[in-house]
Amino acid sequence: MRKINRWLMVCVCALFSLTGCYNTEPRESVLKIYNWADYIDEDMLAEFPRWYKEQTGEDIRIVYQTFDINEIMLTKIERGHEDFDVVCPSEYIIERMLRKGLLLPIDTVFGKTPNYLHNESPYIREQLDKLSWSGHRASDYAIGYMWGTAGILFNTDHVPAEDARTWASLWNLKYENKILMKESYRDAYGTALIYANAEDLKKGKVTVEELMNNYSQASIDTVEKYLKAMKPLIAGWEADFGKEMMTKGKAWLNMTWSGDAVWAIEEAEGVGIHLDYEVPVEGSNVWYDGWVIPKYARNKKAASYFINYLCRPDVALRNMDACGYVSAVATPEILEAKIDTTLSYFADLSYFFGPAADSIQIDKVQYPDRTVVERCAMIRDSGDKTELVLEMWSRVKGDNLGVGVVIVILVSAGIMVVFTVYRKLQRYQHEKAQYRRRNHQRKK
Ligand code: N2P
Image (tube, rainbow, N blue to C red; front, side, top):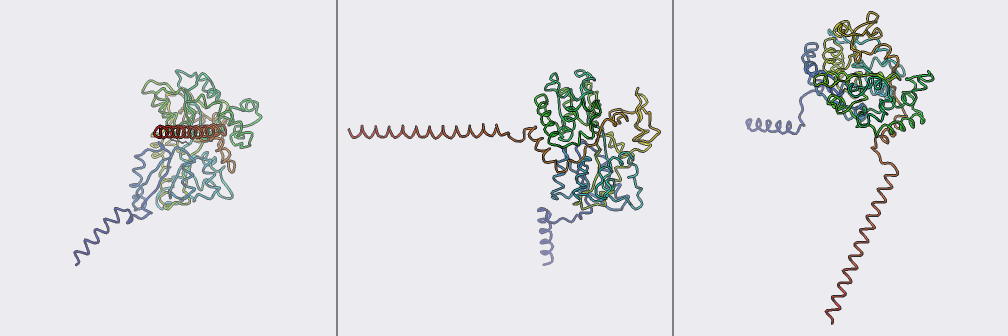
């Protein structure tokens, strides 16, 4: 009898585990991470469980998923269908999440483990704190991960640098079909408004920050007009394939982010394609991505440890090397590793690394000089205007059908129905006549 019982137990367990109903793994042993694609050194990810065990004595298994577009990530989190523990949105989404009460504060006490969160550059913390809302300090909810600019990656064999130094190149007929635009409505919005108001910017009548965050109907209409004018010239909207197209020489201009540009410039060198990157003189977007813990998270402890781990200088350096982007960590180790004395130019990075870094040899695409950052601004949440902006974006992209197209489709369908009915009626009358004729002949 006992033997039968044991077998019965084994069969039931096997059935349960096959159907997935019997899951013995406690949720606190799982860390669900949601990050941008190509945005981490996967070895550092794989090494986290060992480090976590050393620090806490506990086991952790990582579930890792990626996204390419901020809004896709946000939709999943907002619905609460996904219980990600730690995610990496851009600043305007961090602001939206904070306002909607979708974030939990990050732990800052890690037992015996040092607190590496202090390694974040005060400059990044100051920028993120602009997103604070209703007594909630943003830096309690978000720790900077990577940051950079938006600009133009270009093929130096086909595009002179002076062309790439202005957003006008994206509307230049001579680059028809050789332009790629980042599939990011927020970047496209700012770019179009900056270009449309270039004269006023030059005269100091308006600032880049005011422009990029102006959601009046007039601004939305201007953006729509300019993006529609650009659309026939571009080879496509890219979420993540732009860098590949550029390294293969298939596109010559790519409105993209600095880290993708760094990756592409290095990759292209190996295959004899020459790429460079400029932040247009009119001004641009300086962006900051940060780690946050969504309110539906179920493992806040491991999420906080993970964020802390990413702020370790050695981990930050490896992540930077893997993806080309620039870490928000600004310790002396990072500065030392990033200074490149073979470079022929000097940049002022004191705003990021501190006063000693006011004239250093460092990669200008990764670490923008103070003058570049000063002509850029951060994108803010568009609040209740978001829907209007997104509707405009889908009209530009053609995701929706215009009234004219709908009328043409309806009229064509109508004509087809009338034609089919007419043909059927003709055939019916023809068959009826034939039948009558045959009957008539038979009677004769
Ligand atoms: C990397 C995406 C970088 C995100 N694939 C820039 N905000």
